[in-house]
View (cartoon, rainbow, N blue to C red):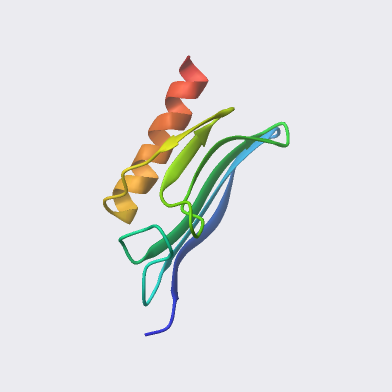
Length: 94
């Protein structure tokens, strides 16, 4: 099985902000992950990444909200996307 790109989209939310979502299904997990997905979801405001969910090799699943990095418990790609939008909504409201 080759890597399969599931989603790769950039969504303009306003003149000064956008979201990017990229999710791949892989033939084997990346280092420090137990699932078969490689992902990067980012919310950028004024050219600064305010929210990011990713699982870079060796670091595993985690998220960044402003300057704070914390572990993320990956379950499914659908839940990942929902969690990403939930964090953006909470950040914008709070």
